[in-house]
Length: 391
Image 1 (cartoon, rainbow, N blue to C red):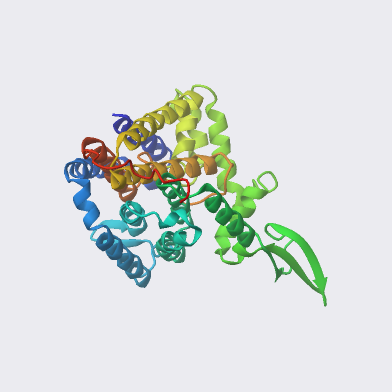
Image 2: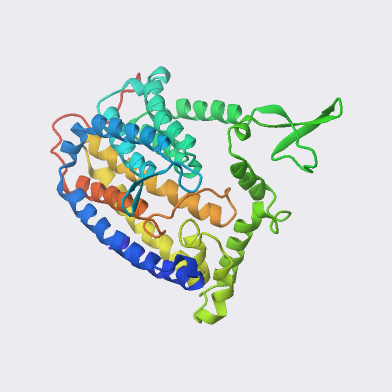
């Protein structure tokens, strides 16, 4: 019921964005059709025994990887290789990859204990970085950010040692932020995220994080716009974030009940029906509307956590945890970027943003969550993931 209310509320928010932007007319109608498909997929996901799905986990994951490779060979759409076109439909393969990855990882971890040791974490990380790397090449930075949080949640719940996970995170952070020199383009006043500068033979060199060298120019611009929000709010780098924060603030407590009063704010926000749908909700329904949306998500998380706790089947428990981790990561990243707490990335708000692939996959994920709650095998042995201290 909470998911259904979120979908309907998302349709209303897309309608607000559509009314302000004539170029996206018809979005509500298309999303409504996607919602009908999502309902059908949700029902199917609840009916098929999840254990039977697990037996084909590796095959599903292999097919998904093949599709990720295939999409890189197709002509780009809007400067990226994310979609496979089937008639009038555009299927985003990275959305499918998120769910197939969770199914595969839950099946892999269900009866193992090797991840209790540091060397045993190598295989789960390799299985994670393969789809993550392919999605980064598309490029789709937003979707790629979901894999590592999901991996950490699932490993922790499966019994991996916290000190191993935190140690890997510390090393990875040091590598990502490691300063490397690069030449600064003439006329550039401030390099992005520079630790310091050096001038040699008349050339300026800045020391910036090595991860920035792997980003596309527009991605570095987003990071720059996030780090210098006030200075760049009138420039291209900070325009979208500045307008998002303006729309959120304009909603105040109860939002704009009169459309004509708030129309000017909604007209100035790009991508408001997709990545920035939360800004539209804040502007139209205000702070109370934002709290209402978060409470509906909390209902899903609380009931999903209950399913994970009372499920003794290892595969079912990890599948439930993976679905919750995926939804949680999407919500935090999307809402965080609309409020300026994180850099702007291409991340949809689950069940509410416009997009058929995202809506259908999230519906399938929730269907699997309920599937686990409906089918709990009788426990005939020790409880899963309760390891002895010497392990």
